Length: 307
Image (tube, rainbow, N blue to C red; front, side, top):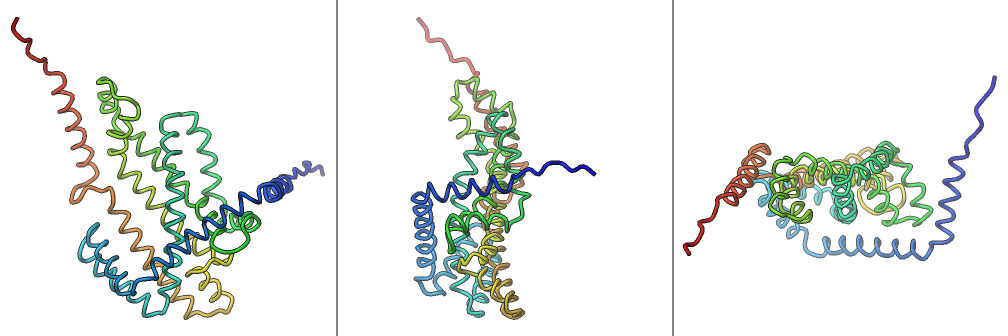
């Protein structure tokens, strides 16, 4: 029985990781220190005020973006987290999720815009995104531990890589689904590509882009829990400890705190970019009417002044 020759793909990847660690240690140390500083600074900032003040601020945020009922849920949910004595790890997890989300969005949105404007970039990016989304989450933790040791830094880097794909996909989708008639109208009146992107494509595609950012946050939260395996503080570390000790009570409480944070982040970000009290279809139709009205006004011939 013949067998195919062994391809040392894993060995080559390991050689590449070792080369990066040996030759780019200064860069890796700088990234690690920066991420540790950002996450620890944000978590300290969240933990500095009294718990009640933070709860009230989050409740006002929930009321502003959604409703009074959601603000009441925010108060009750965060109060429950505090009553379970999980406020500090919850804020540490929230800080790590927010930092990782900001980095992922800063990278994902421009890449999605490029993919929407270039079929070549889209063809190159798509298989990379497929690999990022199908790779098991724990696999991301192996190289980042080699690069950044343990702590917040490997957790943030793994979270960014794991959660970035939906941001790219939804940004590309949001821009591509904008009505071509509106884009062509902007081009007909001399709009530059940047003006069309800023004034037409991004506003019309904002609900879809925000849906992608919402998915980035949800994946970041799930990966932040996995970061407990690499020593990152927060609710993920408590889940890992409860798993090691088979502590059902502690694991359930930490899981419940994660669910509360997930619901708060999901509902808050899901409301951003959506037109209040109107469906997405109505919002798009309203934007189309506005653009066509502006086009019609530009086409009205101006009166020729008398000689």
